[in-house]
Image (tube, rainbow, N blue to C red; front, side):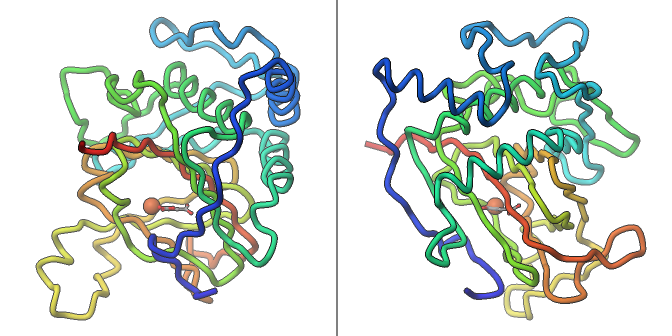
Length: 282
Ligand SMILES: O=C(O)CCC(=O)C(=O)O
Ligand SMILES: [Fe+2]
């Protein structure tokens, strides 16, 4: 594999069969239990709460309330560092392993439409975290719409159905990252990335700056890039400017990953990116 993936290097696997019969429902529940524990047995039709005081999760992880941080300098970029507990992370990794996506030297899997049930549960968890998480807007943070309460996703995106219908799972060996890119325009606004295993630093850089220097080498001054630390179990959500006007990249060339004045030790990293396809124009 190339040390750097580009978004065109995508391995597409077939869509999963739909689980619309009784056996399918049983399998779905078993998968949810497997991925997220017994709390997933609760009524799936129970509406998510998106107003009122924040509440603790019922997922049994015994963790504190989710906290969202708006990333200063990149409008529309939010980080929930403690999104998944250690237990939830290892269940997700088990679910990924069971899918067999990374056999045969594959390092990327893509699914559309009928997503595995554990991914649908992950998507619900993201929705819930956005709805009930505490929001921290630090100084220097510009909000999309100052009249609205700060929320990691605008309400038209948060309440679309489904929230996500496409996923990419990426597996990176030490030294492997992903080139600076804006996600393809065939995907709607509102993209989520869950990080697992090795921590890394993702950098954000404005798109216009590359246009302005398009004949020059495409290395952008490091000082104009905004670094975001993605610990295992973290969740990033991007919309608006962050999705359309900023590129994101992960440079894991040997020695390139630093945080807090120290070089990060690189291990295997896995990520799950969730998006929503735009309707095709016909
Ligand atoms: O692996 C990541 O964290 C980012 C993946 C990504 O940007 C993509 O698949 O478009
Ligand atoms: Fe991306």
